[in-house]
Length: 296
Ligand SMILES: NC(=O)c1ccc[n+]([C@@H]2O[C@H](COP(=O)([O-])OP(=O)(O)OC[C@H]3O[C@@H](n4cnc5c(N)ncnc54)[C@H](OP(=O)(O)O)[C@@H]3O)[C@@H](O)[C@H]2O)c1
Image 1 (tube, helix red, strand yellow):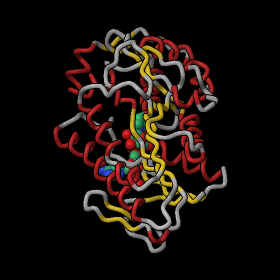
Image 2 (spheres, rainbow, N blue to C red):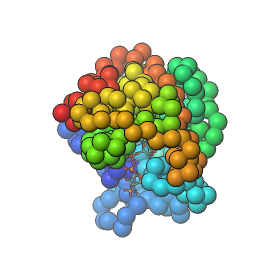
Image 3 (cartoon, rainbow, N blue to C red):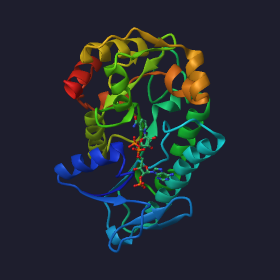
């Protein structure tokens, strides 16, 4: 397939480029950098986009968006997190809908933040959105793909959990802390973490390109969510380091503001119901063996 990819330079996009290329697809990155002859280009803020150099396209995978965890959520950062997703998604969906021939599928990222703080109850793709900033962003992000849906394209929203790889994301940030023996439970440690290995995520996105039964939201998480306490203990065991330190919730709130509550102190037990119904087989269904495979 000829696949256009936004966010190709990122943590997930770089791994997806390798995965799709190894499977024989041709990947065209859509970047905001300097305009290169023969390459597609866009600027979500100004609404400019040029896909002509890489058409015809069979599929689009849209991952781009301002990083959610890169810094304290000031009003300005929140506005960027929201607008980079809503404006970018609307632009790519409108541009895809206007192509002739149209790509058959748009895979447009979302996140398990959609479900908000859902407590211990399992949530599937049929569960309602939660409350708060991240839930609102995820709802608006998914809705922004409407022009592609209206044009008859198959639109898939991977609701992505915490992506684990030693090469980036949350795990790479935690590793030095745990290696120094400073890793520990956050808050009361009972909050749920719905995670997925980066290898599984890239395989799922590749699967979703071809699996016509996948439409709409698709929870991209391993089948076994864990509590923060279980995650901490498993990572400590794999690294053979103590995990006696605890970080009180008030200290996290003081340090990180709203972001601490939304990303670190609350969570949801997200179930990959649609993937399981479609027969997707996880390479890393359980956390501790997954961590051993990544870090062993
Ligand atoms: N990593 C996770 O654990 C996780 C979990 C849930 C959901 N997700 C979602 O999955 C997507 C990819 O995640 P990632 O971890 O690969 O992110 P990442 O490493 O931060 O990469 C994001 C990409 O988005 C583009 N980008 C950054 N700021 C942008 C802006 N203001 N406007 C438009 N594009 C911008 C960049 O591409 P260019 O500079 O090349 O344009 C960058 O390569 C994101 O939307 C993220 O929210 C990630």
